[in-house]
Length: 212
Image (cartoon, rainbow, N blue to C red; front, side):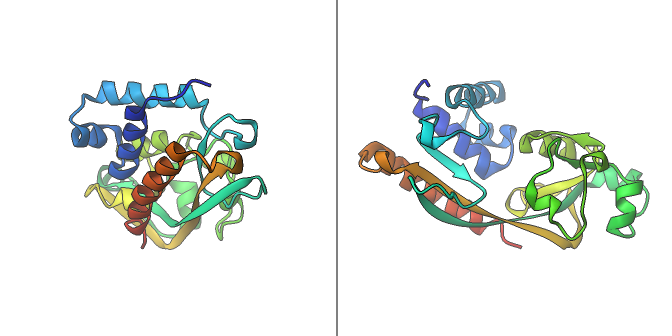
């Protein structure tokens, strides 16, 4: 695995904080294609999405579930809250919203190609076939919602940055724990400890803004 450049980590954090490639590019003073290339190179260098820390495929990982391996040192960042949102343009053209059950039949729902466990156990169970647009990329789902394709789940901290995104069915919300994980053999590395602290500070601030 190639060691990523520090600027690529900075690009990753900016996308998390700003909620989109375009907003992150503006915040960093970069062109959007440049930032997108940095994110793509970071993913390539890390071999993303989910990597095995035990096998040395990544040094530090952000997990949305508590790591269970004893060989990992984990730090809990907090809880990220998600809700359902749609663009004003979609809601203006779509049938009126009545109930969540009816929305599954009458509206375009944006979701995952491989449904994650937290949705399988949700109060309103959904399957892959319920989604009109499917992608395992959160960024692709966000782009589809912003483009007015349909209704989908977004972290509150990201959705609040776009005045054109409207919350729907606020009684349905999901909570995901956020953790940073590091292999215990690497905890003596000053470079990784500093990176861990830097990521924890930035992600903690983001999580605080994602609460309902």
